[in-house]
Length: 545
Image (cartoon, rainbow, N blue to C red):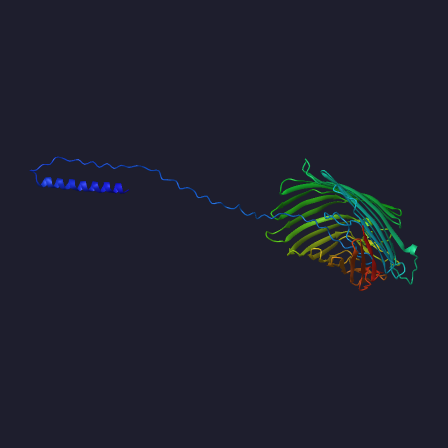
């Protein structure tokens, strides 16, 4: 650059000098100078500009904001009440990955109201390829009212066999429950124990299979078929078969589709009448999940009794907002209920021997919410609109009022709110509360007979010492309506049943237990004219082996 500037300056200097010389020559014509030529040559060297080098900076990969989808299968908790307050039951034995010092137990006890109690569980028949459980139980009691007695016995056996690609299961359930009618006016009627008793006996067996590894077709299946026999000593018997054959296929990480067929056939006979109670249903569905969303779309074509056909929706949607522990759900689900003798007698064992058989359709449109606070507290709620077609109701307006007629309400609508909450710290302490509040907005009869409007259930478990377990329960039920002999409506007093139990281990194999039911001696009636036993106590020993 400096070299070019020097050459330009020299060129201007020589040019001025040339102009001055020419002016001087013009002023003096007598003098002459030889012509002079000056050549200025500039040298230019082109250069290519260097391309700037990019600066590479390492960056972290983008943050993954998607949330994993977890599936929680929580069995529905249904409360069952009989005329007597239920004793606390030990937990059913199941498969546990931890090694237990003693996998079998036997409990035997006795108490007030001539109570005899026995409960045993055996789970020792298992290895890495199969496991099994056997549960045997019995409870008999007798109250102060004539014929106020019951005897409940049962045996449940279940086993699973694990093979490469499949899991096979089988089970057997045997039940024998004896009750006595005592809800009559004992001043007017005098029935013997044999005249007042009713006994239910049943056997249910099933086999099933499901895949535990992917197969070459990419299909998942879980098949089950069961056989049942159930009867009472009043002339009603039923035999039947049930099956469920669902198949599904995962298309990609977001979509899956499935279809299945399920059915139930029950042949029932009573006196001179014979009924065929059957349900046949197809279950096609499509499932979608992505970024916290999970949806299921299904409509189930269903064939019921007397060739009645239905389209039962099975629609659900759930969403987990990002960075929250909240699960929001919406849905519309419907199902058809076969009112078998076994199902009805489990609700009310004091049925009249002959009753009509109809099927019940139940529709539910709901919104739900589940969440947790911290590591110990969880809660949930569900708000539902319900519609029942042919809901079974119980009304004891027979001559002596010791038995219940079965009525079917053709159309009932209701609004229900379900709430649950639980606080738990490991295995040291656990407190749970659940409740259902139902408001029947429309019905064919004046009241929805013997269907509670309020159900509350509480439980408590505490292990203050390594060898001491304490538990308690609370049952509250209200809004129950009945009709007396004068055909007048009667609202039954609210049910309040509180009890507790305790167990202390003396040595690793032997412990002592005590159970107290209906501690406050509340003489409530779940069924009209059938007061419960009142306060009853059972104590005994548990042997582990």
